Image 1 (cartoon, rainbow, N blue to C red):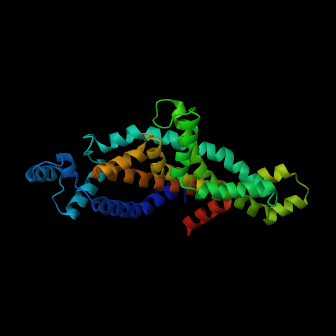
Image 2 (cartoon, rainbow, N blue to C red):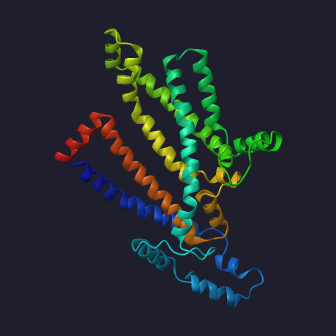
Image 3 (tube, one colour):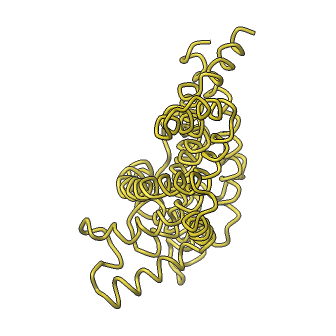
Length: 315
């Protein structure tokens, strides 16, 4: 099976998942309390005016008709028009996406630069004080609520020390606190996965054989250990990147960062159905795309995985 055919097969397998996600998302958004027509018309508007807006938005039609219309629009590449902003949904997402991408990239870069070396160091010296400290800090980082970390950072660095801004995105300094906050959340899991993967690779037969032959620790680590330990690390990094695009909602809200996370909160608050659906659908598509990319990376990192895929194609 060629790479192109494998990717095409994975995309075909993802279509039912995408359809199911769209159905669940459509229902969940619709059952939220509140009426967008009432919000647009205002609290003192007459009932006939509210009904007129509801008819203009198509909200007075049966739900299954609305869903069929929504699917038809998506298939035509039309994500709809935002009720609040009166602009195409895709335009609003593209306007906010660079902020979320910048925040996600900064957080992931910080997490990778610190967590992977710490995980390797902890695995090489599993019973040392460093290993225990890394394990405790990782556990705290993974289990502490992110909004609490963000509020503590705002109090220390913005309110008390006044060296960093607490909200907005006017300058490069504004990304420091939200990026570090998100990175702390990522570092906990990434450090623990790296430590466990490296320790497992260190105990494998081919690594023990390499040690018995007298190869240097650096050579063993670079040639045999890290290569085999990379699959779970790549997996968790891919999941984190996908989660960052949609899961940065709390961080973006706490720091008033104008990404798609805070845009999603605004759309839900305003009952902007097309915009909320568009953002969630966009995040689902990104998740699916990242999973496919991770599967392809598996084949290049581990020849055994590549062999299974190729053999599976011939059978």
